[in-house]
Length: 227
Image (cartoon, rainbow, N blue to C red; front, side, top):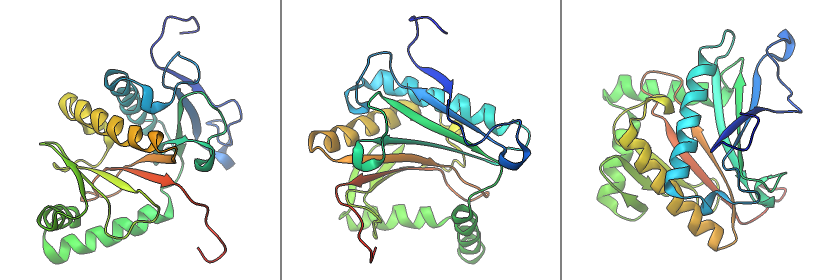
């Protein structure tokens, strides 16, 4: 709504690089305003409010994937200056793209080759290995395993991995969404308390055995030339 009686709001990006009317830059960019409370960080939201935000992500992913010419929907959030946040107000971003990003196509090939060879998803083996090692497990419940990956790209990187196979985030059930909200609250609160900027994004699958994972990257340092 345009008034003040709302909990989560989705608006068009005013400076969008993609539009549904431009065949040379086809797509859509939206902002998800997480709360009507100004200058409120994601970590300060209640678990219930985070759950509402995640439900909005689901709704927008479903709707945008049904839009003609859209091949991939990326939901992400930048929190803090080092993470590229340009506005203080709590918001997430959604990019509806006309192509599947190259890195995800490459991941798809690796995952499907693994499945042909092993007759199971690589994520199944990762879950089994990490639970046996007990070195990088951050948290676990009946729905998710949260780990620091074996070879992190960024400091404090964590993955929220659904235990049951889902390809897209909009396939999560109500109970799974509640659990995911609680884990995101826990992880982002830890980073915010330590004054560490972060990004998190939803990596949706692009092939049958490519499992959706919510990935969170800490931004406590700045890459130099070598990196």
